[in-house]
Image: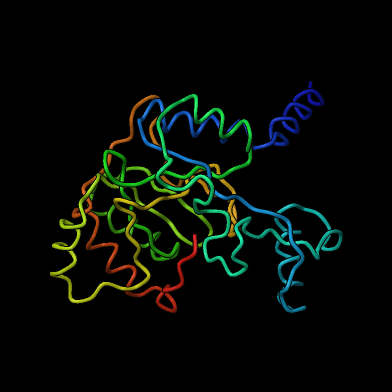
Length: 250
């Protein structure tokens, strides 16, 4: 029995993410009515990093996978778009463009059948959620503050570099009014509103895997707080982000 359970465990964790990505896209599109589209994704490429940086990257990958630091260490995962300096590798629209985002199940199935490893992108704004993102360390502090105040939060998306709090849809005019009264708004704080997008779990991007830090409740459309309720804590936490967090990385 122990051997059978071990085999099942290996099979479960060895599965490709393709079906999970399609399931996630269909859940967003059909159950929650959130428009989605596939992200550009990643491609294997030769590393152009310095030897020191490459060696550190190999060690980190070996630690994550439990493998030796050698092997295919000279290969990196880069954005599949034409920009070699893409700051959001794998995690942005390319073809199709953002305007193609849809809740149509047939289109969603077609996309992820042809590109089963494509990241799931949410087109923010309109009737879909908006989001506010900030560096991961600052976001963890902000969530702790909001929890201490007993504020109810919606889903939170996490990558190794940034966390994003999903909030109720807001207009640019409303956001402008809220930000106008602030003494300063740090550049590390990003707003994903009308015409924006956000990568959703269980996508894989150039900075690593995307996961739910605060997952949606299964079986129901996620509840979302108003952006005004969380903005003060996010601004304060972002102000102290190391280096200002000005480089946009997901």
